[in-house]
Amino acid sequence: MNFAGALFALQRGHKVKRHHWTGYWKARQRLSDDKWIIEIHTYDGETSDLTKTSNIMYTLSNCACDDWEIVEDWNKNTTQPDYMNDNCVVEEDKQ
Image (cartoon, rainbow, N blue to C red):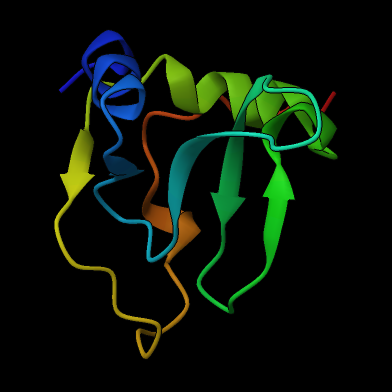
């Protein structure tokens, strides 16, 4: 699905990921101020706020892809993803 579909799924409480990811994104409401945030859950159990990403271009490039899927059951015991085969994300210009 495209990111619009993934966003609607997030709003309905689903976890979403790209087809090759072993982590996922999840939306939740913060208890401190009731604002909605999207959490990035990585394959190794780390969690971070989407707005605090260290590489905004990479993160936004993921949103342009159409291989998003709803996560039914996430397994922490998966291996690290192979990002070398990610054909959708735009790589930085090497010039």
